[in-house]
Image 1: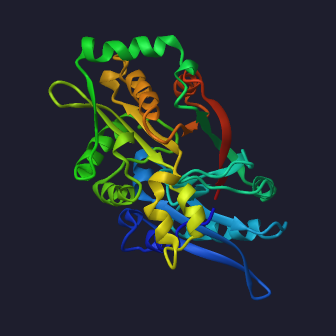
Image 2 (image 1 turned 180 degrees about the horizontal axis):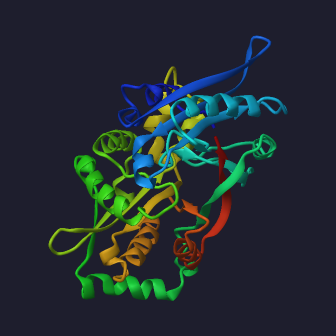
Length: 343
């Protein structure tokens, strides 16, 4: 699934990626006989370190040919750079943070990756563990057929029905014009609801500026939702992204000469979505607003071309969300593993 080359170039630019406002990174290539056989990044994020009160660094962008002597030197290159930056542990892979693509795929190899998902052949996990990496956590992706209401437990509908009547909370759609402002609402929910999660890093203004710009390329009003009280306070947010990978695979990584044609036809090509974020502020978690957003997704699928998708990633330790996915009729179809190593 080739990414759009222009987007990847922009993502790696220090002037464009917000990581470099609160961290730093170094990129490495592995060469053999005049040919590149692997790559890795080493990076640290001061926001992560402040949040977790540690000196953890990260590695990412990990790609390598299937040979027994490539991964270990790549990891040591990253580790050496991180030690020089005063770090005592590294986790990864993540490109560059947990809010970007992360993990090594260890299950679900037969499935085409969704937007912002990595894909790896089965030997990746094997080589990583041979090189001494240890599992830190697994991330789950759930498949949801969001046009099939029969798979939802009845209690979800009961909870959804009382949200507006009892708690005066309504759901509205974001607009392209208001997207940057709504990203502030998203951050307010995310930075509160996710704060206790493994690997959490808060979104800052530069992060949100970049995030809003990135979403302009895939924005579909049907799938970007905000739940608000009568007073206009944000109670919950759901951001679901039409899977642009279905278009990118036809573009073969390039806009020219004909890639733009497929991009302009994306609304007729994309039939699936990635439910990337659905969060509720602590004060409203008793209201059933999450159930209302779930039901809204199923209703939306009944009138749009997108009928199914994947939800996540979700931490294996997030028991409440895993139970909620099961209540929605979801099933785990992919696992991504984040590794760690002491420095």
